[in-house]
Length: 292
Ligand code: GLU
Image 1 (tube, protein in one colour):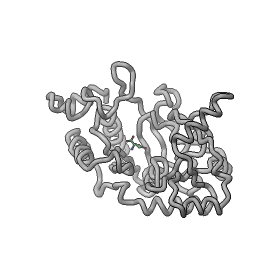
Image 2 (tube, rainbow, N blue to C red):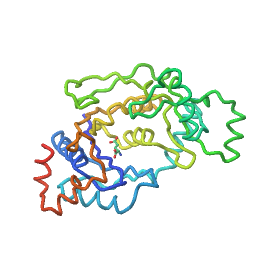
Image 3 (tube, rainbow, N blue to C red):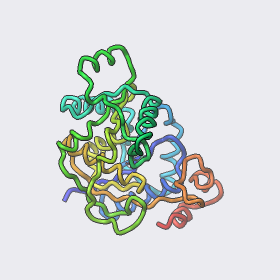
Image 4 (spheres, rainbow, N blue to C red):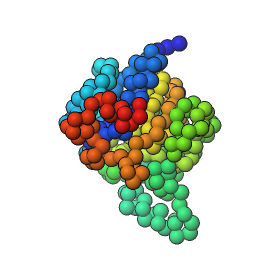
């Protein structure tokens, strides 16, 4: 059997908190227990929100927690050409299309449709793409791109699902709402996402696209991440299927919630690793706080 490969993949858009500590520690411990490798991937495609000082803080905080990872670290922003070439491949397969509506136009279209019935929303709460750009004539597409209009590249979900057929993944963690008992095979539900965005004119990738590509490229065999990403796996499965990429095993873990039952955010001081450390907490205290 090949050596298992785990990964922790934070975005350097803020300081790490207890939720990240749980993810990182679970990956580290599970990799150790399986005799596997742990890689660290910096998911920094959002140039407006990611900062080098947050990346430096990630390394420092993880090292303080006692986590060891392999070098070199893959930084997604250094691989935009690879993502661009996968987008070109999806375009050649006619599995993607550019759409030109602004966010405001999309909101207006959704509001219009909702006057008849509730328009479906994806698992993250965003409305499904309501537009018709899938059917736009090639000449019009090309003319609008040549005019420099902004656009998003979307997956043609219906075609991609037809191409891929029914999909499943193996799950050993918590369900989408943190409940146990979801372990085993999960049927992917990619239709729930509609024509998801895979890239934009100015950034030739998205979270979904780069995660699917990188997990394959880095030989990741085990994806251990928060249950908030549970249903994202449906999109990743479709991309793996149409791009002929291997499927890792998945383990979605419980989230650490604040006193009001909300997901932790990077701006919340009370649960930040830096603050806890400054207040005298040890790595052992952090483990005890998050129950690992
Ligand atoms: N970069 C994502 C985050 O920080 C995690 C991606 C993943 O584990 O698939 O939320």
